[in-house]
Length: 137
Image 1 (cartoon, rainbow, N blue to C red):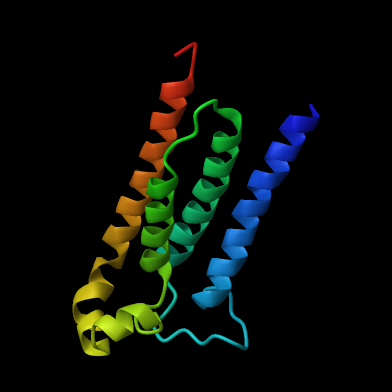
Image 2: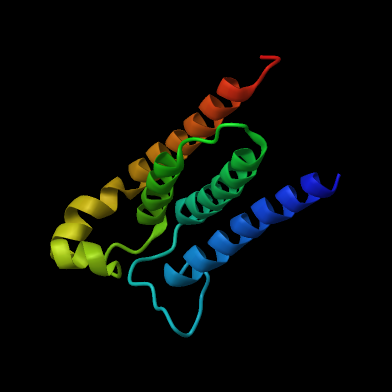
């Protein structure tokens, strides 16, 4: 029971920690340090919650399987989720690569699609790992 509890606490900690960290640095959780340049939408919050929940579920699943896999895919899912709910103008990496007008014209309309792909990607990874390591399935 102790190992179950520690695994669960660790995964919940990752989920809550990623929610708070990503929420603050993207301006979805209002704070005096970071000002969001585009309006917040319900989809932004949905993708923040989904990405955080999947991160916690991935950490839990990694702790219970004999042969964990998918670390790179999980990192890609986190990055995709972050780009889906983050402010495109405030993202320094994107802004260094592209102009703000290009980001608002071409990237901003694609953020919901990127979020849906990221969530599907994470769900597929969790499902694949579960099926791969499930003896009764």
